[in-house]
Amino acid sequence: QVISSLLNLQSRGMEDKRSVEMLKESQDRIRSMALVHEKLYESKDLTNIDFDEYIKNLAQILFRSYKINREKIRLKLNIEKVELNIDKAIPCGLIINELLLNCLKHAFADGDEGEIEVSLLFVNGNEVVLTVSDSGTGIPEGMDSNNSGSLGLKIVNILTDQIDGKLDLDRSKGTRFQIRFKI
Image 1: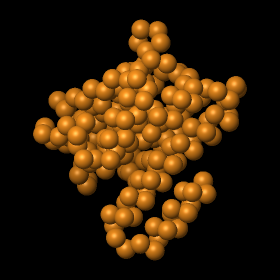
Image 2: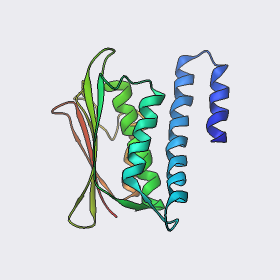
Image 3: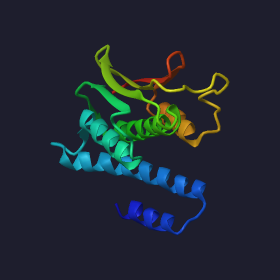
Image 4: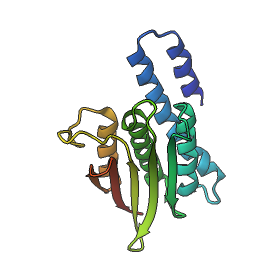
């Protein structure tokens, strides 16, 4: 909380919009990690968190932070009850943060309507599929999620490797990122 507040104070004196945006993105990353710890302290055993609740809270925070009109950009959550330990929760939280930010910043032009969906589903017992998709303009065909030049997508790739996950990108209807990993 303190770090986020310090970044906010620093951004107030800045005039360069790109620098202010970079500080805001850093605040969002810090907030996503702080939320994991908050949920951990609320948990029964201090080792696992209810990740379904975490996703709902994170999405609400980001929609508010970016002043998203919920009548124009709808959020659909399809989330099963999943408990993650801290070693999976922090990277997964940051992955969701980056993918939601990508949707909120790039998927829809001003005034466009659309939908962002986040799903977290069990498959094959101990495997989870995390999907973040939007009905927006989509990532350009020539852009490779592994070598995009985007810090957010680099973070997603690094953290997917960290959780031994497999990342798939589908551009057929907007953009859909799907990550499979074992818990």
